[in-house]
Length: 183
Image 1 (tube, rainbow, N blue to C red):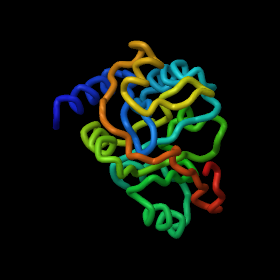
Image 2: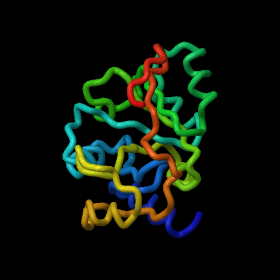
Image 3: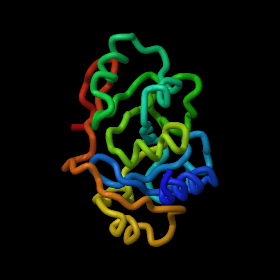
């Protein structure tokens, strides 16, 4: 594990909110099981917790425990697009903390193909909260410099690296109905 990843993981394990590059923009992340960390993330973004967040992971076993009662074909469809820039909303399992989903009955999940984000999840040992690095309603950061300007030292760590080059954040689809929730 390189030093930057080790520092990011240490910050996560200490309950910190970090920033890291994803497929299109920088994301803010934390341990999904640390309720205080998730609350800090919402406060930093100035975003209502009722909106929920998505989780990003390195592989399917890291997200499987969050998926509730879903047909095998829905899981197969999502897995066929992963790893990659596709986020799917599944019914949440009983193991999914309510503070992740807000007012929603499902949980949004993505298995990333972004090498640094995947390496971070592997080193952390599980899925991470992932939401765009910006104050609610503003343009997401696309570089570590933009993250620093937006959050001025309020984050526990910024993992510097290139984004994946996508122009827009990943599309989000409902895994059961196939409905496109975000293009």
